[in-house]
Image (cartoon, rainbow, N blue to C red; front, side, top):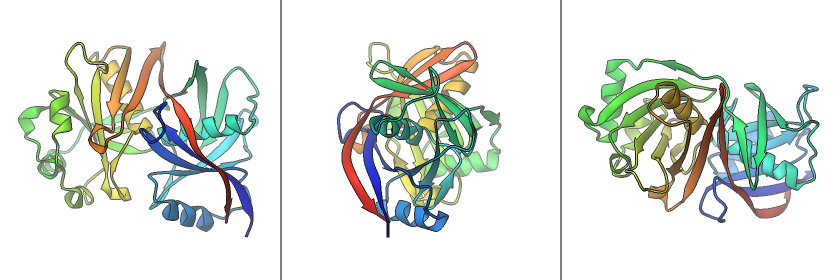
Amino acid sequence: MSEFTFTQVDVFTDTPLRGNPLAVVHGADTLSDAQMQAFARWTNLSETTFLLRPTSPQADYRVRIFTPGGELPFAGHPTLGSCHAWLEQGGQPKADRIVQECGVGLVPLRLDGERSAFAAPPMRAAPVRDELLTAVLAALGLPRSAVREARWLDNGPKWLALLVDDAETVLHLTPDHSALKGLAEVGVIGPHPAGYDCQFEVRAFAAIIGIPEDPVTGSLNASLAQWLIGEGIAPERYVAAQGTCLDRSGRVHIARDGDTVWVGGHSVSCIRGTVAL
């Protein structure tokens, strides 16, 4: 066994235990795929990341992202949390922006005060087959009349995204996770009324990869922002809440600058030490 520097980070929050936890293993170049997967399964977090030397001369570091059930080419809260942990361990970017290498390629990150933000990778949208949509709505206990739009959104992870009438509809969903497990990863978003501290409420259901509900999901929020801003439904800058039903207070900060959508949030380290693998 070898020892590796380890950080557990809470992402999309500035208050420990109120965001989405992420396990980060530093200097993991010697670990095999099987060892990475076994550790991710053992942590039982929605994602565990492994920081490695980059293969691209443009990148500052490379990251591999694992759920308990498999590897992802990209995910949002692991991107922000890995960047936070890398910087905390003395990482120095080569240029004015940090560049992460991962399964979808190179992902730029920028610092905005105490928050970091990643540039949302390219997203593909597609219509949802009516038969599948009917099955998903039944699993959510959601009437079709409450759904304004439905799309497949794919930026590495592939989400079946639903825009519903309001945030209260999102918060009162009681999904059948066993039914969703055979259908899709599902993201639901609805607007809050004027005057609320966030513009939207989001929930993410991913039983298909072993995560009934994810506390705060960067990849989903990135795709939702690209979709809804592109359609003129959402403003170019807004804050989304996620994790409310799990007693979390995740806050995802969205900003479009030119053609790029930036997805940001705070991160805070909760555990620092070593892990034997």
